[in-house]
Length: 279
Image 1 (cartoon, one colour):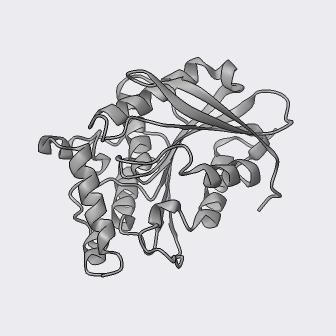
Image 2 (cartoon, helix red, strand yellow):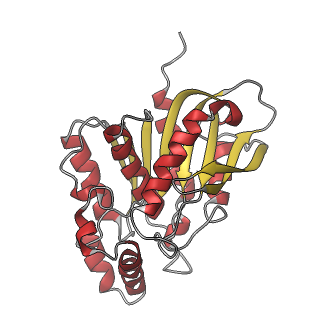
């Protein structure tokens, strides 16, 4: 991995669907000129909690040590939590942030070449949905989507999720996911809406290339891998990587991305592949 670079980090406000949202911009310090790639990142927290501080250390490492560093910006944004307003408030916020970023590229120091949407857990759900919304609503054009251990199945029906319910140490994770979805999707009919559950969508063509990261011991593993298979079957260029299990002192701390080092390596490679080699 590259040496860690000094970062310039700026707090700012972006426009959500219903008002301003707090955001944080990460860039390598001391690099002149506008950057080619902007990664818009949404935090985890099961739709009901989380903020800009939750992924901060991960995004600092991603911005300084990998991912093309000097030619990349990372914009982390908040979104409306389900405790404030349920679906579709969060996804409408996420898509609005992408539109704001495209419109305000000069303010961000971005030249508009590559726009990538990314997230972890619930934030990865929003990232996947943003890819659908951007296609359906005519923009903004996305160069790629990065989904880290995404929440994609409100039914919690996969084998990896069922298995975790039988593990006393991890059973609380499944219960927490179920409670989160009850808050996010109080209307049962919304549970099959493609903007709530991308895994249920039958229209996955013409989406941007995807990097999907699952983890060996993650209860969300199977839904992530099923979504990767569906994207590939729809003709979407998809890279799936299953990360090795990492021992955690707290078994419920999965969305802290304990496998951050491996994830950053994969994200770095993926983003580097978006740009054509210099002529």
